Length: 216
Image (cartoon, rainbow, N blue to C red; front, side):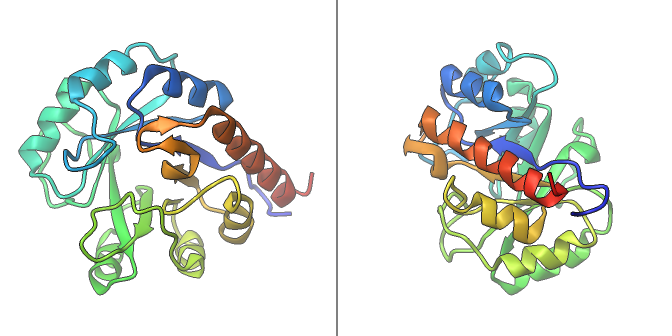
């Protein structure tokens, strides 16, 4: 049992349909993510994201997901979509109008620049760890070495992404005990189209892992 352990936060990412967003929330999602990186197969227009955003119940966080877009483009999409936070690899900014606490840095694990970026983030914000794949900007559906995440999780709030699914989420949580997890392709039928049964199963396994850690 881990003293003081509460629960794992969950973000369902790559949302492009309102029914998928609502099912995610009903199952227990703390946040839903909209991908604003246009080359992505899960891209959604910020205006369409706002339409979904406005139909969600209170206390659910919405996150705009970017790769390395320019700061001006990030701010524009943030305003148009009405999301609560942004998640991006480009943390140089500045991002006028976006509070620092609403910017989630993305560190790609598996290359030296990711390690340097992790060292440079000295504030207490949560950091999202994703898998580095040459030539890709995320959303690869591949895992990375979770022992690295485990080490980072000892000193700060870590959100783990990359290849998560109902089949491996129990192992990830009990091994790393991250602040949060981020899943997209692992609960899909096809890019952007969620499998509602997989979402339910994912949350079931998250709850089981949390209970295991608490010793329930």
